[in-house]
Length: 324
Picture 1 (cartoon, helix red, strand yellow):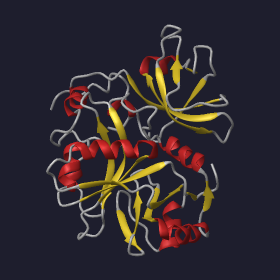
Picture 2: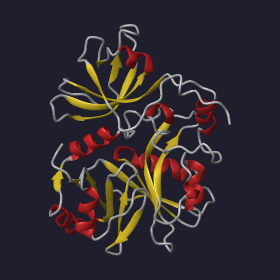
Picture 3: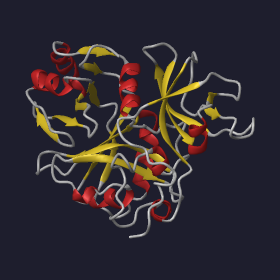
Picture 4: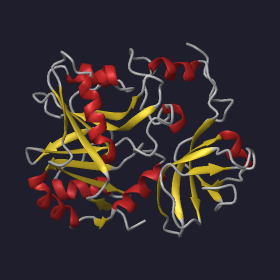
């Protein structure tokens, strides 16, 4: 990856803004995370699931740092922003909340790598702690993700000034570099190619703190809870690299553990690897991961080499959680 810190102005992330006096309660009832537990300026990972418990979208959100501002900012894959904005709006009914797609009207900058926090402070005079957002220049927010990356969201008119300030303290990189940071951190981003395929646990979103198992109901909650307390996961998210020239989210993965025409996994995120080939995150059957004979795209496709994640992934036996 590029010399740290790195700043990306094309992250492929979209921005939704929920505002109104019922915004917190509404999102709390729709998302898997405990939105009501957040104070001003606090944030968390989240998932939005179908009634069958499959992840339709995921990302990170935070409450506005100013107590007088009732807005919540949600980041998600840009190719899902319009779809999710429309779907959430369908369920507003009499709630006093407005869901807006703010992607086109906003500047979004991602800062990652060693020194990301220091670069943010040097450029903008703020350095929020992990999981917290701060306001600067009146209308801009800087938020530090739980994984250590920083995102800045501001009105689009302020974008040029912010980018110029950051360029003095970080290397400007493209979207592939930003994707590589996410892959190395083991943080998946569901896109249109993989929406409605996985329960949150199989994408490790429970391990990352994107699911609360103590809050009330939300779409898919019964399925997600049943998997947590009564089920046994057969697949999880892992990181890999391959000498393949190309791959895309949704590409199937194969193993001799299964039949030739039966896939055992799906690519979630992918980016060109600095060592050549591609780096990727994929949800894969645990038996196939154990066999260590995974191939990309076909049973005779390029081999996949597993890479470590910065957190522990439970084995099949450890994933079984007794009801509490």
